Image (cartoon, rainbow, N blue to C red; front, side, top):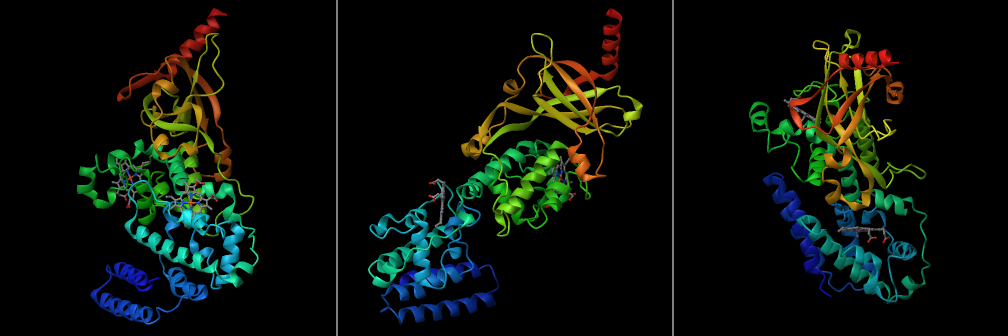
Length: 447
Ligand code: HEC
Ligand code: HEC
């Protein structure tokens, strides 16, 4: 077996990491890399399992690089967590996990994990890491199973939360990205005009490049960018700019986009908290609730509604509308198919918003990003028919977080509408609160 080139590959890789630093650093690391390969080349005779571990596995663990598993798994899948300083204990643990097959080492599950690659756009750096992990670990396993002391070490069965099936699934990158699409991407219609590069040229020229943080059609890359730019705050998810800007808890050039404790806020916050727990080592604990696998999909539609002629006393209040279908027998159905909320414009006494629509059928998160990224069709969520727009007032503002989030609002009346209507706000669907009063009066007269 040739050991030298492998580690040289690692030193080149080390070099690559330093290349972005200053020339001074670069020179130092060239020297370091040279020194490293000298050490390696002078000890090519090492062949027993312990020594292979020392020379090839330990350096992998000591590097600052994440293991290749991180390309698809967020948590609990860093090889460093399974490979300790003692090769025997590590071997026994891997056997306990069922990751090493001593009869057919080639078929070891761990080697299978190390051969998995994303379908497209694999990270070049991780590809190198993966290759060196695979080669070193394979060599070490193949050598170990020829040594008595390794074979005789009884497997250690770890009682390990990280490997609970539910958590492995929950923290898989594709699942996390799918939940991002479900909670946040589905609503970015509120932000694209100013924050997506296909539409924000003017905004960028006025305010700078940082205006762009949406990467069209790529929720995974968008999520990574939000994390890298610290727009998502892992340590204090509720303080993420992604949340505090559109709530205008901090100054926002785009003004308020939704209200504190509105459904949108609750949904975004739940994702941010979940994300933080997913990526932090001290995140999820035994017994924690993980989100359900089947979910009802929602999407910010272009069904704009404007309610005019609202009572003066309601100026500035937090108003929510829910769209219920009226069935053949004239009764409105219990569940609503669309929803919207914002505050009542105090000057014009009108309320306007785009509605969030709900898909009638739940979908599995396992369906993945490619399915979840498809918008919910308005025609499916809101089929042609007669509806009532049920109006609620909620205690507005961020006075009492707990009370607000439980506040389901006070029902103040219904408005009849035919839906759906053409998308966009030129014009929106306009309904008058006064007309509703007329309708009610007419109904009373008839009695
Ligand atoms: C290219 C993506 C990808 C990479 C890289 C990857 N995994 Fe996975 N992993 C998956 C997928 C998808 C599943 C679920 C489907 C399955 O069980 O095959 C999974 C499931 C698992 C499971 C739970 C199911 C089981 O078979 O026990 C474990 C544990 C696991 N991976 C560990 C790892 C480790 C350790 C690494 C790195 C050495 C790794 N994975 C690298 C995609 C990946
Ligand atoms: C009408 C234009 C407009 C819309 C729509 C808009 N914003 Fe903004 N946003 C701005 C402007 C202008 C800035 C730069 C000034 C500032 O930082 O407040 C900004 C800055 C931000 C920043 C800070 C970015 C950084 O890295 O500095 C975040 C985060 C943000 N907005 C989130 C949102 C979210 C989330 C939405 C949608 C729910 C949204 N914005 C909708 C105009 C808009």
